[in-house]
Image 1 (cartoon, one colour):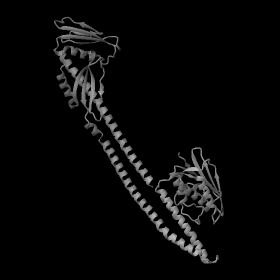
Image 2: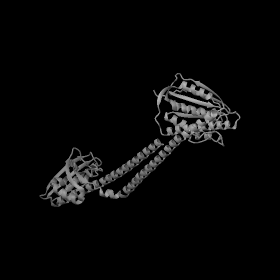
Image 3: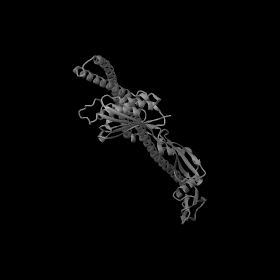
Image 4: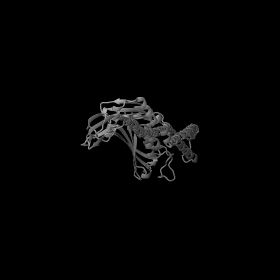
Length: 472
């Protein structure tokens, strides 16, 4: 019982930790996913803010500039070049990708540039060309840029830094995504791709909106966790109470056995004294004394068996030694041949190459004795018992006890190993016993790490085998 309680405790605690871990992992993934979605939105906001900034300063350049600027670029997905122009007097026009100058251009200066951008497509062609013109006609003002972006992004904007790389950046990308323990992210936005320039913007990802969106999920997870912990606490409390009750039961049984042994021994002593006196064999008192003596022996056997089962339940450590199993079995065979109530024929078939065996000698002999006792008890007036001992192929010792008894029905062959179960083969329970023999056998075999087998047929007898592993 104690081992089962510990196993239930362990399983309950492991299950609670596993469920709490899964809840935590689920919440962590949910928060991480929400932060990732928030990061994507921030990246889109940063891109829109950069576009708004470039559009703003581009319009200002066109209004104030006295320089006509024409930029032509060749892209991989178009045979004709894309051309964009910045002219204060609107004196140039573009037809089929060719720039024409109208008369009266006057004193306005004119600049022309051509770029080969065939490594990319034309999705952002006019934007990048206009940005290049803006850069040629103005000087970048970092302070003005920060003020403009701060108005667009608010408190989410932390700072920005111009970066010149070896490759052109055409699409916005997230360099450092936000994490649960680091609420900042780094976004790189195309700024002036023709000159390999981009803007790296550091932004804040606020947790409050994310937590508000997950409020009901977190409350539900917390309630489930609290209910689980309360259930585990209640389970442990009930199990502790059960353990206490089991301890009281065990103490009561031990006390009862101890208290009953004294009057039983006294009763047996008195019967022995009266039996020693010379009496007529047909005397009624002699028959009564013989009956009392037999029942006293039965009661003593019951108490001994009950004590053995209680001790086995409490998992008293086995005394594993190497002992002579052959001699021990020969002794048991000799004892059961002397049965006075029935004619008992016992044979031993010993097929092992060695007489030594590893195990708890006393407990294993008790097991074999219980099996032989059942054979005598549940057989007719002539009992034939066959005891066999041999090695298996897996370094195990198999001991079998066969008889010619009444047998066990198939539907009872699993139930007979249960404590206090009595077979229905004797409806009137005329055979003495309390149903502890086979349960004791089961516990001792399991304690040795072995296994048991039963073959039985009603009216033809029973064969029970135990297999005990041998550890070097």
